[in-house]
Image (cartoon, rainbow over all chains, first blue to last red; front, top):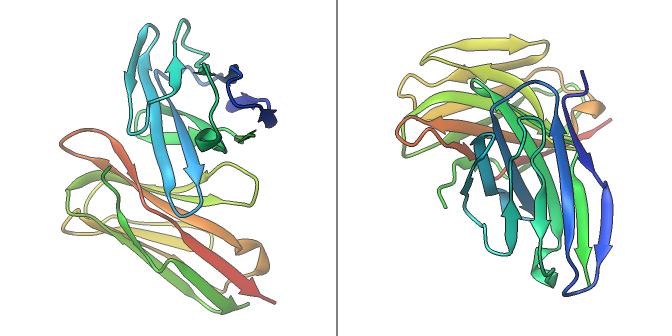
Length: 110
Length: 111
């Protein structure tokens, strides 16, 4: 039981490049979400999904896309990276009321 | 977006001291969660609280769900250096069912 896994752990992009942050969970949780964490801003919700085929926007969705084709996977896509997207990204999954986080992806956009 | 008011923002204490931090909200919550985040890692769930007045312990950690359902506190007794990190509260808003996070309390423990 690995819990929530994320790849890559670190990534550097140039402005305008695209990439996908991967997230997977093996707890059969229906609810998954993506957060970004910036200094002094706490955790901000980007997108979330309440089950396969269903996604919705969180607090800061602009510049990010998500899809949920399976219960296990919830990738986050940056279509055209911008320096403002430099951050640490956390994927989380929730079964019932308890939410568990992945180890994070540290992204730098130059 | 909606945020919880978490205090204090930071604490610098000596090893062996007790620590207390709290979160308050203008909304009624039906769940409170407390997390710890070590540097370079994701938040790890420490304690979950499900009903008003509930008091739950996890080793040296004790957390309580406030009677008004708008606050929660976390106590750490006899702190040790590995308690260093950022502690986050999170509450499930009863009206929207969304999980709202506090801005965190940075704890530093001097040996």
